[in-house]
Image (cartoon, rainbow, N blue to C red):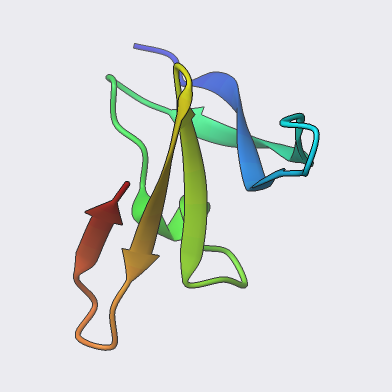
Length: 69
């Protein structure tokens, strides 16, 4: 299967008016799989918008992932 690209948001922030802003980048998706190294480029935390909710995905010092709302 050929690799496909998907635009993901990096550094999503919700401002006082409720608008969400951030920087977009391309992340390779191969067989429904994303390499975490592609998500955590130059950062140890990303935010994920899921519907109306915002989640934080953090990379720990022990190289584990923590997802919080």
